[in-house]
Length: 499
Image (cartoon, rainbow, N blue to C red; front, side, top):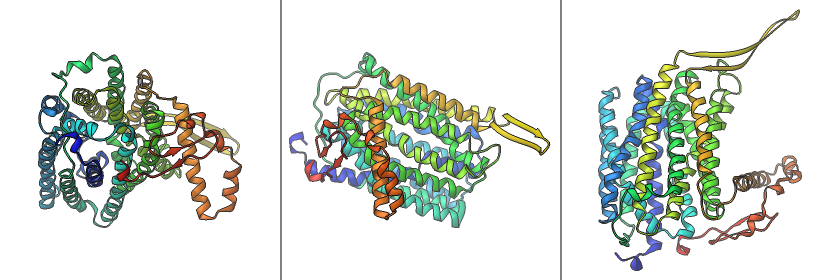
């Protein structure tokens, strides 16, 4: 179909519904849930790290897919590959339904099939969406699409949290079958998205992105962050279950909290990326992951303590920010630096290099966790007086804590590399940080106002949250955001017809 004949309104509606269905599927296949299943059948740390690396190793198929991504119908490739990948989820569900303690290698085989087939469609899909969605609404639309999907997925995850609490590990087969049903619903809506004819611009080469120094800075930052984050993320749930001794449903409940946090941050970050740039938002998400990993080391001192639940809640609120923002930000940054119809090689190289580092990070995480499993490092303050003996633990690191500490340091380094990337019209991280802080304070104030809490309302009224605004608000956002220095930002929700 020629671009001029694309029904953009209909396509964006179907893309939105596909986003809802696919987010439900993805929310049931997160690394937290997969690692929780493996931990529940007593899989060793190395195997958990290896399985967590599968989604990233599978992305190597994006290299060959880049050669035909813009030579054939990108819609047909996406439909066929996604259909086959969803069938693999059906196989996993039926296998576990027959025998929950079935051979773990059979689970691994089907999980590999799901990921490899899914990745075949990634480059054609990214190139297709880059040409379909108008640039001036791309960040906000992606954020809205993912946020709506996560909102629907949140209810599904909460439902499964209750099921795990009642039925325990026997819920896993139902979980994978539900993921299959959501995946097939996604395929149905993908059929309703119009194809876009590729504007051929000569022969494309995978070497072209490697000659772009700015692109290499971007990919280097993402790759190091992927290495750092995937080194630790698979073991967050393992830590909660095996070290903190919480049941599986607690890990699932925290994952649902992350979903809720992600919905909120997507609501405010999409327009911020369109107005202030993608780079500062992505850099802040890297730093937030580093903070989350550090906080995990304080959840035991050396045992669970009264602040442990509060720390876990804080960690998974941060998870909603650092897990949802980078994919959108990096997709937008690549789209901004590539000409229309020529983005496939850039997406392929970026995704494959980052996936190699992510897979290496997951495997390294398993090895590091196994090495430090029996290691203990503690610093204590002993106070002895006539009133008795007091022992105060100041630092206590053991087993997974060393893994989280290494991951945190590498994530900060990735943020520093990202700052070297040059993005047109991107403002400073401080401006974006203040805007996010202002949006959060404003929303808290609105919530308290509607809850009719006069004391807290007066406290917030007198707090100087007006300083969070910045002169950068004078730059109006095309699509309905208007702001002036010192005033509240006004968001006008666009309907899909306006797109």
